[in-house]
Amino acid sequence: MDKRIVIVGAGIAGLSAGIYAIKAGYKAEIYEKNSIAGGECMGWNRKGYHIDNCIHWLTGTNPGTDLWKVWKTVGAIDENTEYADTDKFYSSRIGGKEASLYNDLQKTEEELIRVAPEDEAEIRKFIQYVRYAESCVIPSRKPMDMMGIKDYIEMGKSMADMPKVMKEYGKINCGELAARFKSPVMRKLMSDYLPADYTAYSFLVSYATMTSGNGKIPLKGSLAMSLRIANKFKEMGGVLHLNTPVKKIVIQDGAATGIELGNGKLVRADKVISAVDTNFLFGKLIDRSYMPKPLDRAYADRRAYPVTSGFQVAYAIDSDFSGEDTIFFECKPLRIGSNEFTRMSVKSYTYDKSFAPEGKTVLQANVVQSDSDYEYWESLSEEEYDAAKEALAAELTKRIIAEFPELEGRIELLDCWTPLTYNRYCNAYHGSYMGFVTTVGNKQMRFKGVVKGVDNLYIAGQWVMSPGGLPIAVISGKFAVQRILKKEKKDIMSLD
Image 1: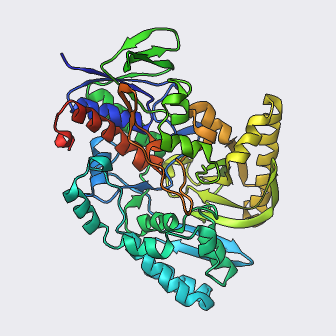
Image 2: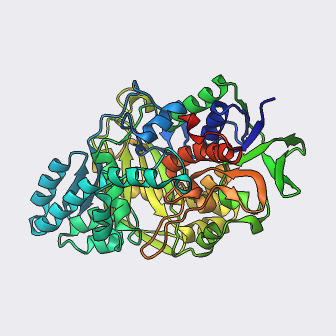
Image 3: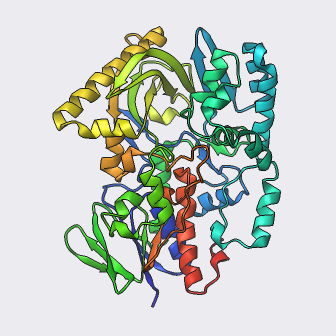
């Protein structure tokens, strides 16, 4: 009889784990508390418009790469996938000047030198190191702790230029990177996308993903991709239980034996894979004392391992907004709790015609939120929360119109959401839509997806390795199944 794997959570990690479990010869069932699969890779409709919540770009879109093969295996993309026709990463404005990071590095270099000739030498160096960073890939064939010498040699060859990047930018943060430039607009360009205390090399790698062509945007958006993966799982024979919250993972005699649902029903399993937020797993589904030490340290040290969320607003625009990318700009001071913000961003979704009626578009605004911002939102009563959301959305609208006066009378509020929204729907720690961010001087948070003292329990999800996000989520589902195969002395590479 085929062994039965039960998976908690139908986000990208849980769906991936389900598909790879079936490929490995197991029966797989996924239990999800929400009415739709996808977790934070989600979108929703308002007033005839579609709001996309997740994919700014999808890492792993270069055909033939190991990560692309994983995405193809789970049904997310394939050789026929259509991508958005965009040419920019983002732009920054200040003091009447604007600078952009294009997907074309030569174009970027020429524009930045034109905008800030006083920074020519530093710009040329930055561009060269982004080219080096294009060699960076996420190991996707098997977990790093399962790699042998040959695997590490191959990885070293494929990422031969990354040591140069780490030597030059591995010990500074984005704020320190920005300080290397004289021009105010260049300083903002270097520090707008990631908070100032985040590592500079992370920023270079993010941009390099775009310039290498390995970070494209699939048309139809995040929800459509999640549904493709969920359908693949069901077509393979997997069973997906929606609207079925899990109360706890049952542990008997040092081993996971199944799960208890919210209604008290027990579901037996040979193996259990948790694909939910690890803060929810340790403390809700099982006792927090089981938490691996690296993870526990990261949760305890909020300064060394911050998380990122956002206060976001979506608008309907009564025209094609010409931006067609993400633009950061200075704004009148905006207070959220005890924190004050003087910069914000807007992103136009003109590139995807399926999101809005013909001749119109969706525009989304974002103010980056931190741990302390989450605590502010959490401290409010329901009435205070609703009032604060409404008032803040109105303030953002004023600032958008001040920056883009052509939108006066052509902008309509569709929806707004906070870090608390992510926590409510996805149990996301402090509303984070990524994992822990590595700061300078601290080790990257990583742990094996197993629980010491509990056999037959495996962990998938973006929290198993920084910086999290969709690539970590999808490979972690595969890795969880590979760990099961290794424990049963089976070929872990039979999944490829």
